[in-house]
Image (cartoon, rainbow, N blue to C red; front, side, top):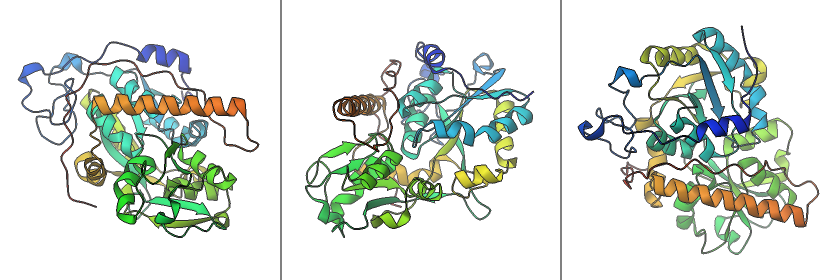
Length: 377
């Protein structure tokens, strides 16, 4: 029987606020790399190994799936329903959707053991790998290849801005602190183009790519770096008009959101979930909502996330616990400021924002090991 419901947020977060994961291998672990002490990487593929103790393997009766909140989280519950129905039939296990309102909450949910399958945004994928034992295995795409995106800096079509250097002293919106395309990549690439964040302009966090786009559209921001795939989807849905904007700069390509499994699922179940993803073809409405993609392609963290790790290395932003806690606090503070500003002077037509997410459950600090610096994309 196919079940179509989501877990209530309050219940889910209370379940997620559990004790941190204990080290799975202890001192016997020969190599961890950048992974938290709860995980081991003996085969050096940069993701957590399957536990060697059979008692630590999990075979849940219900699978929980959550997708990254790069846009209004409510959009995705319906968009991914065909996939969840397919997983329920294909695995024989009821599969349910949980609506997350922050990247931090999603990462902590997988670490706590309450999230089994996650669609993580590009940058937070690395936090999920290092801190939550996530194992990326797929990226959405079409018949030719998996989807990539660029960082597109958008301005209003009638604005005077032609280059990044023209934005000095202007209001430039980044999305969230942990976002690759909305924050880290701009910090890595902009200085070479004559624009240094926090020096040439004060970074304002919008809280999401859709909010950045709508903020530029309404004149709240002069410009914003956004993920090109999100921007295209908003145009396709009619949320904004393409001719209202100009793109004044684009980055090299990055992979889009990863689809990852918790490392400690029973290997037979994990392999079954992977095959269910690769056999699935998006129905027409889902394909339209997800930028024309119609299937999942295999992907690995060590190879496909190399450009993302390069950006993190260049801006000295290691994907460790200390950095995650800092960026999570910044996200919460930015959300609180936006909520306060809306209460004081609500702007007509301003993009809506969800309630401030609950703080992430505290966990033990990870070793401050930065990811290795691969070659530039």
